[in-house]
Length: 159
Figure 1: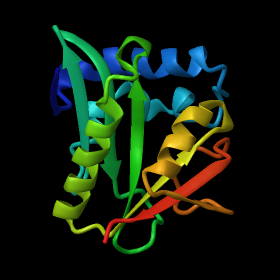
Figure 2 (figure 1 turned 60 degrees about the vertical axis):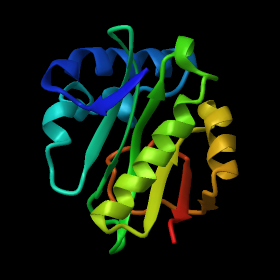
Figure 3 (figure 1 turned 180 degrees about the horizontal axis):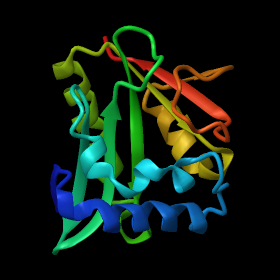
C-alpha cells in the first residue's frame, strides 16, 4: 500500500469513496461532508497553506484518505483532522493507524499543538478508536467547519 499526497486526478474517486462510506453507515447527508461542495474538489482545497490530504492507494485503487486543515475559527495552534475515510475492503489492516501517525507528524511540522475533529454517532467504531488514540470529547464544536449535522466533537493535545 502506498500513501501519497492528493493529486488533481483524485477528486472524483475521493468524493465517491466518501459518499459510499456515508451511505454504508446510513449517516446524514445534509449538513455534513456528504453535501459539502468541497468534497468534489479536494485537490484544490488542500493546496491551502498548512494543510495536507494523504491518500492511500493499493494496486492502483484509492482506498482511503485523511488530512489536516486549519479550519476557520479554530483556536491558535489547532488544526482539524479531516476527511478520514477508508473503504470497506481496506479497513482493519492498519491504514487508520498509519494515517493518524502521518497526520500527527504533519500537524507538528506545520506547528500545530492540537488536533480537533468532528464526527457522527453513525461512525461509532471510528469514534471509539479516536478515544483510544487520545482524543477527548468536547461538549460543543470549535471553529466553523460548515458541517452543522455533526454531533461529536473531539480534541487531542499533541505535546
